[in-house]
Structures are given as C-alpha cells and as structure tokens.
Length: 451
Image (cartoon, rainbow, N blue to C red; front, side):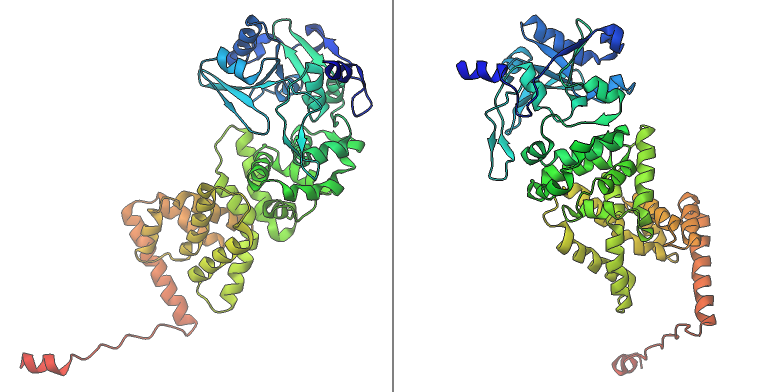
C-alpha cells in the first residue's frame, strides 16, 4: 500500500508530474453521438457497473482532427476478468498485456484495463516482455506512447481528459513522445514504426527530441518477432498514406537492414523501382476511396524489382522466360522469404501473380484461352498493366490482352490466329523461320504387313 501511494505522489521517470486538464464540450466540440453505438454502449455499461470507462487513443485524436475513426478503443479500471463477466459476448486475449474484445452486433470494441507503471518485466535489451500490471488512469496515460494518443473522452459528461498536452500538440500538428524517447524506444522498438506511420498518416512533424534517438535505436527492431514486425509494416503500407510514410522512413533515418520489406520500400524513390511507388500510389487512392485492395498484389509489386533482377539474369544466361522466372522465385524465397513473417496466403498470391507474367508473352493458339481461365488472371493482368506503365512491357501486349479478355469467342480466335501469323512473318523477316518438320517414314515391319 505504501509503495503504491509513493508511486502516485512522486514524480514520474521523465521527471514530470502528470497534470490533468479537463476540456468541456465547448472547447472540443465532440458529442457522444459522434461515437459508434457499440463504443457508447460499452462505456455506459461499465459506468453502470460502477467502473470508470473512457473512449481513448486514436479515436479521440481523429475526432479532434475532423476525421471519422475506423475503430474505437475503451480504457477502464475494471480488470479483464471483470469486463469479461459483464459482457457475455467477449473474450480475453493477449499474453504480454491482456485485453478484452467485446462484440456488440457486428462491431468489436477493444477494452483495456488502466496499466500500472512499475512492474513490467523486461529482457536484457530493456524490451517489455510481460505487462499485466494495472494502475490508475494517470499511470495509464503515462504508459501511452505519444501525447496525441493519451486522450480520454467521457461520452456521459462529454469531456476530454488530457494528461500530456495532447490536444495542444494535435493543434500544432506535432508528434511528441511521452517520457524519455530513448527509454520508450528501448522498451518497445516498434514505437519507431508507429512514429513513422502516425507522422506520415496525420501529416505531423516528429518533435525534435522524439526523432533524435530513432537512428540509434532502429536496429533493435531486428530483435522483434517477425510476425509482429510484419503486422506493423502492413499497417504502414495500408494506412492510406504509404508514400508519405516512406518519406518519413528516410527522413527519420531508419536503417535499411531491418526487414526485407522495409529495405524494398526505402528504395521506392529510385527510378528503376518506379513500380513500387506506382503500386503504393494506386493503393493509397483505393483506400481513400473505400475500395478493396489485395495484400498479395501490393507485396508482389514491392518485391518485384528484386525478383525481376534475378529473372533477367537467368534469361541472360540462356534460360527461357518461364523457367527463368521460376528459378528467380526460388532464389528470392531462399534469400528473402524465409523468416520474414509473411503468411502463406499472401506469399502464395505473390508467387501466382509473378509466375503468370511470362505467359502473357504467348498470344497464339490455345494458350491465351488457358491463361484467361486461371483464377489469378485478373490480378496478374493488373500487374501486367503496372509493368506496362513503368515501361517494362510493350504497350501493344497490354492493349492486346485488354481487348482479348473482353472479346467474344469468335473475336478471340481471330486475335490468336492473327498473332500467330504476325509471329511467323516476323520470323521470316529475321531469317529464323522454323524448319519444316520431316515426316517420319513408316517402319519396314508395318510396310510388310500392309503388303
């Protein structure tokens, strides 16, 4: 009891005392009806059971910026077991820090218990490994990463609780780390990628002291579990502002050798890697228009320059197009894919898109019809268009396939016949027309039997 009391009255590790500012509705203009039905219901039900509960984090930040939040999180002083008992449709998840997913209709609300500040288990590198310690709302605010995410909204009173000048930093469009930035990156290196993503997505400047330790501590990301690292990279890629995030990766001097995907992304500005920049531009536009995107397709574009380099090298060695590409895919898997955390469903899509590319070179006979029937034809065709836009593929081939897939059966037959005749004409002009096959003479035994 004495230890808990001392922790509340003494200054925090950063040397700053936590001072709460309460902003009424007249200063922030966020009303309860701007929340989702599920979030408001969860908060009110927890209040009804005698617990504190607030909408917290990115949802409050986005509402202040005039952006519609994609999801709502709730923070409470109820333990995960107490939350699970209150809500029948809920489940406790997480090992490092337990949280509760509460299902309300089709929506899932993530409910976290206020975190304490002194009992986290750290490894030899200072990374937090286990953190199932609970505390007050002040301690919870101190444990959050950036000031813009340490805001608590009470939909009953329509008030915002601000413990770290978060509202002011949002107004100034600054991303500021709570506490000592170097220590916070040491506790959890993934915060570096979050700084990249949030500053790129929100258009914020990373405050000087927050940015300074990043180059030194970015190498710690290599020690993170590959699955967790991959998830953070996916959030960056599909933030709707991937190109801005790439600029932040470079301006914040995040090193190149952390993960193959980050290495590829940081090279997107090079002229020979235009396909990456173009794919991310298209993805950003689709996400902002609420259209669907394919993770496998985007990853295929991000890693294409490296795969294409292998492919062209094997072709220069005399291999035919399709076998050369298959060997390139195998080489890429040996050097990049192992241990990089990509789920099988995404890597399989990537390989199928890549391996169909040489088949677009065949526009005669039955092969185009077979390619058209492939389940991944549309994704592979879109990838062909992307390659055409960066000058890798002749536009005549792209236009031919654009027409072929929309033509009727008779027109398709005429197109393949014309393609065959055109190829034969080109061979005659180049002096490499195929030799006529010699007819085999019947075997003597068969001639004797016929007589």
